[in-house]
Every structure is written in structure tokens, then in C-alpha cells.
Amino acid sequence: MDRRQVDPKRELFRKLLRNIPSETVIRAMEQVPRDLFVPQDSRHMAYLDLPLSIGEEQTISQPYIVAMMTEALELSGGDRVLEIGTGSGYQTAILSALTPRGRVVSMERVPALMQQARQRLQELGYRNVEVQQAGSSLGCPFKGPYDAIIVTAAAPRLPESLLSQLAIGGRLVIPVGTLSQQELVQARRTDEGLSLRVLGPCRFVPLLGAEAFPQP
Ligand code: SAH
Image (cartoon, rainbow, N blue to C red; front, side):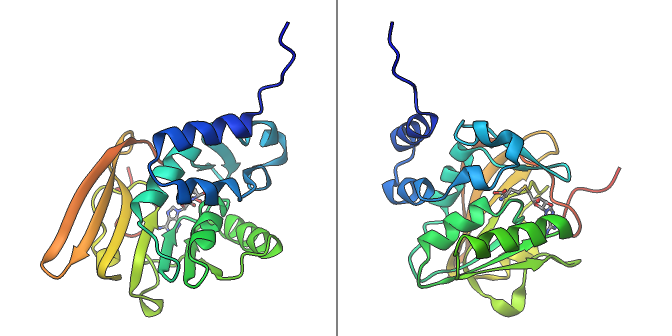
């Protein structure tokens, strides 16, 4: 009988390396302890390629989707980055690791998640990050413009307010579609306007508040 244990973390990163072209992104993800961003009772599942519940009806995204979105941001080390939907702070930590000379502003709408993620990121030593309470409008224009904006909740269309916070050459990565199904979209702001690329299907919790789905 084969008694070798399958190491889920090793398996996960082997799979991601096979499927995501940017080794830099995957190596950065590998350095971030996902087990410390999920609730204690889900730790045994932290390195499975699954979204997991983090309370407050929210989820930490599936690692494959995190990798896809992070790659689509096309980050350089000095970029200014805006994240909408801090959640657990896992994606935030990866953004921080990939922009050591830049800055990450991450906005979260649920105060309890915001506080928890802020403390966790600080304790883990992610210094170029600030986690802020989201207000009634999207983003944080006065700290922009941003080289990259990532939205980790689903929107019915590209939010105008976020497009206006993008620097020329900046990339917005966001799931756009209906409540039940979306496409991951990369929008790049150029001198001439916007260039759009559809990356693939996905399913996210809905964005809440301004520029979100109408309330039933
Ligand atoms: N990136 C997260 C996933 C978070 S799930 C992680 O790695 O854990 C989406 C998050 O978006 C939820 O925490 C939700 O509260 C938040 N959210 C929804 N609408 C928002 C808004 N308008 N502004 C900021 N955060 C929002």
C-alpha cells in the first residue's frame, strides 16, 4: 500500500502553476498562509481549490480565481492598487506581496470583516497596505489614480466611478454579469478609451451599495 500522504498545498500550487502563465503570481500566492485567513474550523480545507465561507454571508475566493484575477492585474512592483471587497484580506496580502514598492488601498463594507482583516494583515507584517471602511460610493478617489483596481464582488456592469479612478494604462479586473453568473473582465484605460478582455466565467457574491444590482 502507498502510505505517502498527498500534501494538499503542494498539489494546489502544482495545479496553479500548470494553469496560470505567471509563475511570479503563483510564487507570491505560495508565500501567503491561506490557512490564517479562513475560520479555524475550515483550516483543514485552506489549500483545496475551493471558495470558503468567512462569515457575514461572504466568502474567500477560490485560489484559481484569485490567481486568474491577480495575473490579469499585470502588477509591477511600484503599482498603486485599489481593492474593493477586502473580505478575509487574503487577496489583499497577495497584492501587497507583488507591489513591495507600491501601495494597496483595500475597502470593505462590513465593519466586522474590515476590522478583522486590518488586524490580521498588520499582525502578519503586510506594511504597504491600508484597509478602509467602504462608504456609500465605490473606491477612494483622493488616494488615486490607481494602476490596478480589483473588485472581488459581482457587478451588473463596469462601475463608472472605478473607471474614473484608473490611471492611463491602468487595469480594472471585475466580475460582471447577473446575480447568479458572471464573466471576469479586464478593462484597460488607454489614451483612446477602454480596451476590454473577457477572461472566463466565474461566480461571486454581489457587490453591495452604489453601482450594484438593484435591491429586490
Ligand atoms: N477578496 C476577498 C473576498 C471577499 S468576498 C478575500 O480574499 O477574502 C467580497 C467582499 O466584498 C465581501 O467581504 C463584501 O462585504 C465586500 N463588499 C461588497 N460590496 C462592497 C462595496 N460596495 N465596497 C466594499 N466592499 C464590498
